[in-house]
Image 1 (spheres, rainbow, N blue to C red):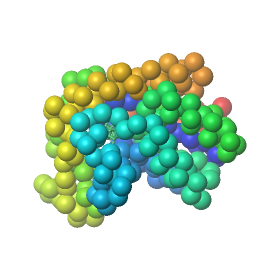
Image 2: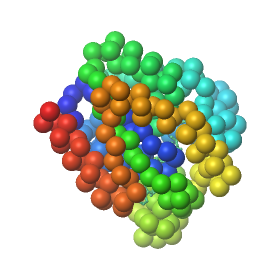
Image 3: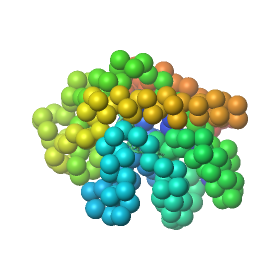
Image 4: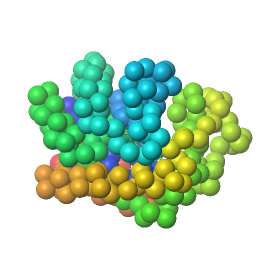
Length: 222
Ligand code: AP5
C-alpha cells in the first residue's frame, strides 16, 4: 500500500475484518486500529471510557460518535500513524466517515482505500458464535472453521482463549441490525467517492486473503 494512506475494512459483524486487517497491517508494517479492541481494552482496564461503553456494547448498539471520534483522534496523533494505518470497524456511521475525511485531509493523506467484506447472514452467525480470541495477543480462532491445535489454548503464544460477551445470539441480532441501519449506508458513501472495493468474503480465510492482495496490488500499480 502506498504511504500516507488509510485502508478501511467495512463489513458486518463476523465478516472477517479483524482476521484480514491484522495480517495486512503486519505485512505493510503499519498499525492495525480496531475501535472495538480499543473499547474492550478500556473496559478491561476499568477506565471512565470503559465504564461508559460497557453497557452499550453489551446491548449490541453503537457507541456515540463523540466518544468514538475522541478516542480515534487521540490514537491517530501518535507517531506510528504518520505514514498510514488499517482501520477495522471504523468508521461506522456517516458522521464518523465525514469527520475522518476531515482528519485525513488535515494530515495530508490521500483518499482512503475502502474494502467491503460481503458475507451472507447465515454464515455470519456461525462465525460469531464459533469465535474464540486469545486473551494475550488477540489471535482469532473459530471452533468450526479455524480451530486452535489444543482446545482453549492459543497456537501462537499459549494464551487462554476467551469468548466475547457480545457474541451471544441475542446480542448478535442487535449488532447485525445496527450494521444494517447505521453502517451499511457507508458503502454508497464510499462508492460515490470512487474508493470502494467489494470482496466476496464468504469463502475461506486464505481465499479471501488472496482476493484482498489482488485488490491491494492493483491499487499499488494505479
Ligand atoms: P467490533 O469489535 O468492531 O466488532 P464487529 O464489527 O461487530 O466485528 P467483529 O469483530 O465481530 O467481526 P470481524 O468482522 O472482525 O470478524 P473476525 O475477523 O473476528 O465492535 C464491537 C462493538 O464495539 C460494536 O458492537 C460497538 O458497540 C462498538 N464499536 C466498535 N467500533 C465502533 C464504532 N466505530 N462506532 C460505534 N461503536 C463501535 O471473524 C469472526 C469469526 O469468523 C472468527 O472466529 C474467525 O476465525 C472467523 N472467520 C473470519 N474469516 C473467515 C472466513 N473467511 N471463513 C471462515 N471463518 C472466518
